[in-house]
Image 1 (cartoon, each protein chain N blue to C red):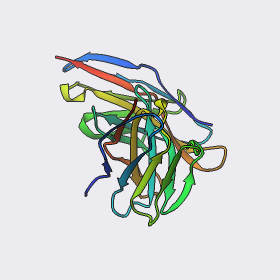
Image 2: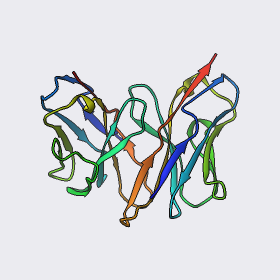
Image 3: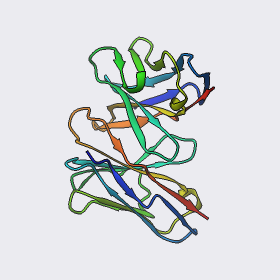
Image 4: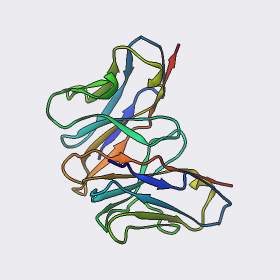
Length: 114
Length: 116
């Protein structure tokens, strides 16, 4: 099966600019996650979708971050305006959402904010 | 609340020697536990998972982990390290939060170095 696809792989922007990341989950996976992984740390959940509805966005900095999954398939994560501390790898993951189904991760987008 | 503590940020072993990566967890309910591996510039790949069946879980690439409830531990082991095992390893717990919703908590990771 095809894995989770993310683009772009790398992005460099200046602070106060905006940026968007795209994710296409594994076909048929109802649950989609966006994680932020700062260098040297474990991934931190930003937002979780079940189909096109938000399940958990408690750790999403909503003043600058937004995410959508309009048709319940692929998703975009946007940062506007970016800050230096947003430099991280942004990982998308998907799962069937049933029981203890594992998460399948994409290769991530490495964002550098200068 | 739940938490995961990976006791070593770095582990270095020689090729062909055993690997031990330590993980302790805290969870209010019976959790599910996972180990993921992350190679440089790659996403996380599932190594193995424990979901209340057998306490000794076998995963891919010769790795296994033992769930010890009395010690709240889920250490990852491999009898003989290979150069390709060099990567970052994450212990993950999935339990029920105070909100009643199930959520994942990641450890901070252990970087495994394998010396020739």
